[in-house]
Length: 266
Length: 139
Image 1 (cartoon, rainbow over the protein chains, first blue to last red):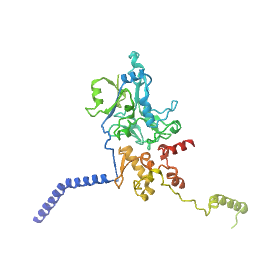
Image 2 (image 1 turned 180 degrees about the horizontal axis):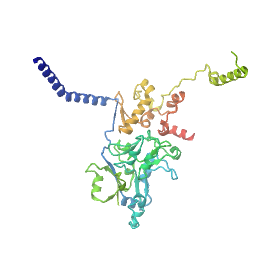
Image 3 (image 1 turned 30 degrees about the vertical axis):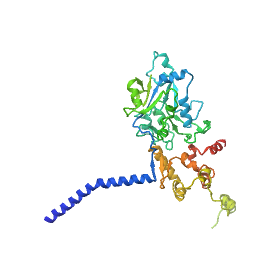
Image 4 (image 1 turned 120 degrees about the vertical axis):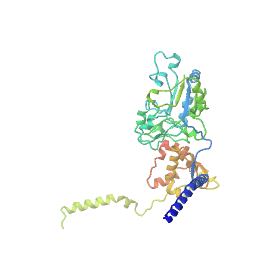
């Protein structure tokens, strides 16, 4: 009987010791992993990379209109499309990452015949809304399109099978299908960025490759009127939050419930 | 044992076997030259330490595994840089890392791929350096 009690106490002691040693072991293991990451082989990000929790864009329509009064401005579109090797296809099978449209097309349901005359023609700069509840991601059967932790709705063209469910799912028409080999419709190439192949869907990625290097999206940088503002909605001190808290903004097709992250100041 | 219509059947059989084995007769005895990937691009020549992201043996057998891992890390995990075992950092990118040194796709990648009759679809989207893309589009 006594013997058994002794054994029980020994085992209990050993267990307590083991449990109390666990954090120490974990810490040293984490240190080893960190040291290994220093030396490699390992993957890492650029230390300058921009990190956010919910990337968003604010489009100041008034500023964009004023710039367009001086002459038609397509700087954001050109910057994006030349950087990302987006082909110019002159028919309805076009590819677009960022484009212009009028009020009625940008905000169907919101538009009525008494909308201020100066707003009717816009132009409204339209692009992928990087929704918080993206319909395209829900319907993608291969997870070729997915939502990153920072809110960006990404495309992995390696996995895209071209079923176009995402295009049916997207209420904003922000996705384009490659009906042709895009090489034929590109006059010049950016050799630091891939093109796409026939049979995949593509769209704006909020310039994830530029954010990874610590740069703002190409359209934001190219806009001469500073009408595009990019930032993290999760950060209360960010410029997008400051602007949105001061001025009334619109979002496209809120009624479909995808929670778009592109805001329009009108 | 008797074969009915033996004569035409045997003649037909000989012609058939001869036709099917034609490639062996035509190329018999001639070994096609083994691939000889060229490493003498200007970018490699100015390197002090001629070293790839992993050992030559590993890269020869498993470069596709490296590229797959790079793809996953860059696209899905947003980790766009790779630190080699030696401690050098490269962008995890076919166009921004591999092709910077191996700028001679036709003399490097294609030699082995053509030898084993392989057409990797990397090149559907990823652009080889400028002069080679220009040539490919002309064709």
